[in-house]
Length: 122
Image 1: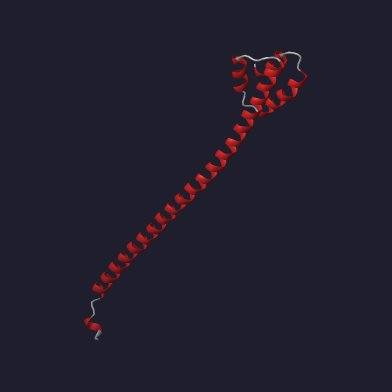
Image 2: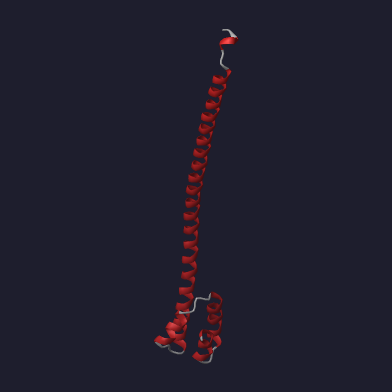
C-alpha cells in the first residue's frame, strides 16, 4: 500500500466515530451496572427491612404479652382483695408502663385500700 493513497482525514474521521461509539457503549454498560447495583441494593434493603420488621414485631408481641399478664394479675388481685369496678379494670388496662405495673404488683400486697393501688393509675 502506498502512503500517497491514504486519506488521513478519512482515517481520523473513522477513528473519531469508533471512539465516540465506544464511549457510548462503555457509558451504557456503566449505566447498566449502576442500575443493576441499585436494584440489588433495593432488594437487599427490602429483605433486611422485612427481617427487622419481623424481629420488631416479635419483640412488640412479647412486650404486649407481658403487659397484659401484669394487668390481669393486678385486676385479679384487686378483685380478690378489695373488689373492682369496670371503670377500675379499664383504668388498669390503659396502663402500658411495665415498670409501673411491676410497682403496683408489689404495692398491692401491702395496700390497705384500693385507693392505695389505684393512685398509680391516675
